[in-house]
Image 1 (cartoon, rainbow, N blue to C red):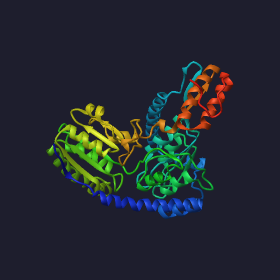
Image 2 (cartoon, one colour; image 1 turned 45 degrees about the vertical axis):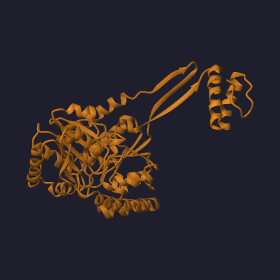
Image 3 (cartoon, one colour; image 1 turned 90 degrees about the horizontal axis):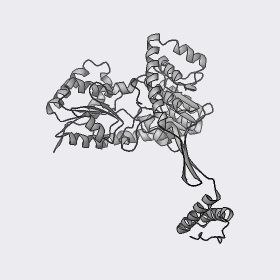
Image 4 (spheres, rainbow, N blue to C red; image 1 turned 180 degrees about the horizontal axis):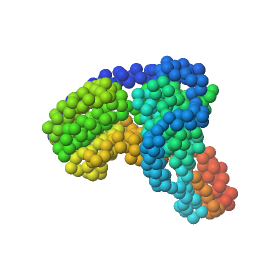
Length: 437
């Protein structure tokens, strides 16, 4: 068994060096926001977006005026996509139930799924207006029952993008701000004089946005590390080079550092895909971006077997994995580390990105090894509770608790249990000792 790289991306050391610069920039920027609040946010918006309106928060009149600029045809498409995402999120929500059970006579245990009380949604729009990200974050949060959902999106070509604002509004955003990048994420998490901080940050973004979320984690919750888009195509000779090349470049156009990899058992497909990518880059309007990503982060990996392709894909744990083979369901059954799976040639990553209903905010940088993507459950906290209804149950549990606490040396803990044994069991337990068996 051998694994052969037909094309490799940037060396890992070079990628790490790029990341170190991002880390330092983000840390400095967040410190500015912490110290200077709105003043820092405005300064950063002027510097990076050349945008400084009287207020970054859109009024209802401004929202209405922007929505009026969206054609009826585009509004219908936006509403359709919102419905698909909302419908699937509702199905997912209904799969999560509260629990209450009597585990022993008189002992009641339960859990409740409680919505996070405030969420900040980041919707990218600087290079491309990511209309769909509003459905994925804002609408899904509202399905979960989040009472306060704020949304930030950068200006597009110097102005709020009407379609993005429309999608945010349709999704149910309570506050909409025209703010981008680190300043948006920082303002939502840290808070300023005019923006109350949130409890949870969600949404995709570039390397700076992803790093800002990483550094803010702990102060607030985050959905996951959703950095630059990654896409992987796993293919055999049941598909052709045009299909593979199109699916690779369709995601590589996101940015200058969007990894795209082809895993295949066909040397012929590997070579033909390389040629097809070169051909498409001569006609693709976004080739200036996609070509850089492909040059620096593109890979084609030739494997001997399907098992080998599975092994490599598990190690890489990419965000999007498009599987086009004669055994797609085998990959579904055996893959464990990825963001989202797209099975068969009839679907594609763009379906998931824009309209089909699954969420497009997915784990990157191998985070798929330990987390799935954004979904309605990310906005819910599962909290447990307990109650004891009878004196007999209080005594029985108290006795066990007392002895177990003393095994660990926690006398104060034991006395919590002993007090119940004395009061509800009418038993004499000497202070600081374990209850008798």
